[in-house]
Length: 157
Image (cartoon, rainbow, N blue to C red):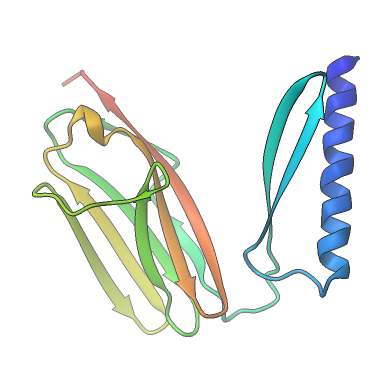
């Protein structure tokens, strides 16, 4: 019963935030808000991201690597992301919410075509430290969209 109350309260808070954001001028692509609650002595924080797909010009990710990518240690890890927008979006990559610093084994490549851009992140050789959550961020002046990909290593050959 206690957990049902928490879920109900969470949805109520999210709904109130949604109505508040909507009443302040409508939904905008990439609008963000944080909701904090103290229920049962615990502290919970949730990110609320609202987007409107009414604007076809905004950056949107149309394809990419599956959410979980398993790689073998010492081999190549490849992550892909394709985005569309007008103007053509730019794509940046992050690992565990940090910018990816250039290293000898990290390579980025991009293929622009009309309003599309395809981006590939290659890590070779992939090591234990390359495990984590990678995020493809597509951005243009009308909006931003992200896609997260979890990379996990495998010891099997």
